[in-house]
Length: 284
Length: 145
Image (cartoon, rainbow over the protein chains, first blue to last red):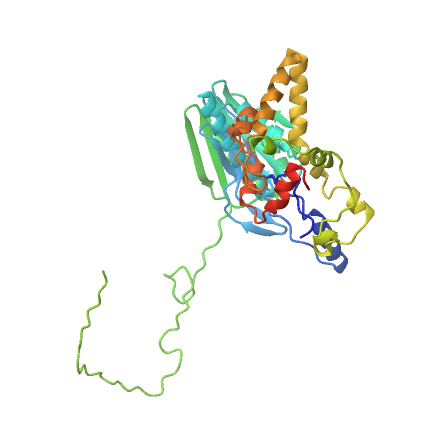
């Protein structure tokens, strides 16, 4: 090949080589009338609330791919550090990779400082990374945790802006969930009350938004303890399939019963054992 | 031998500093690769294919420039001068150009040995399927090309 990249050493990270080709392909596809497949989004309801001793995070469990449900029970509450968890809405791959990268960075940082990481550190790392990519990484996050300064809750938007609030919601069902919060939030709630509030907010998102559904996951973070409750509540139960003929079995049976095919005649031949030899095999 | 390898010939340095846009299509033998980049057009060659492409290419140099200028404003000229001397020294500890060097000293100076980013996960150069032509790359580095 005559043109080689001799001048610059290869470096890692995002490669934009195929962008032009993809734009041309998309143009061609649109001319014919079909469209390229959409990335899997989480079309979600996620929310968080600060209560007396900590933070409660909640999320639904449906992942959509265009108009089809791609995953009926996906886990949207990601681990960042032992005292910090993050719910993610938006493109599923983006939220997954972003939270994993920040989790690794926080671990390295906490090993280097020798302290438990702070929620503000995670927030700053996330917002700087998302701003660097100018919103092309579609990850809307709700970050919550308890550190040496108490419980904290942040919401982080895909372009890199953040808000520090006592209660936040994100995702396509955020308006439904926010309505519940605005009605019933009180500062310094007890843990059970906070869990009920988050459960009701997510349920509002599940029942009123097409992009959210299935179960409700909760994560209660207090000083020194994390309760990851998955599933906390199965709001949408899928029906149980019953075979009409065999009520005891729950799943279909594909074996045909005796008598399905009519039997014309039956002969039984007894086999006689004439000789039996054993050949030893060396299996060492 | 060490002397030859740690200075770049003047011609190769000059070539890098002048950006050549639109005069050399990216297919083999310098021809347009229609399968990968579509039909030729002036707009395609002058503008980057993605809004983030330029910003990402210059991210590290821009960050360094910003840090050095802040340091100069706060602590005076000696601080960035000393640091840049160390960077230059560390940048010269390299293997031959077609081999992947670990850049351990440079990473430690920059602080990127304590962080993980997309450049460590995606497109790891140590695992790229194509290798540069060894002779051409060494000749380019020595400025003989």
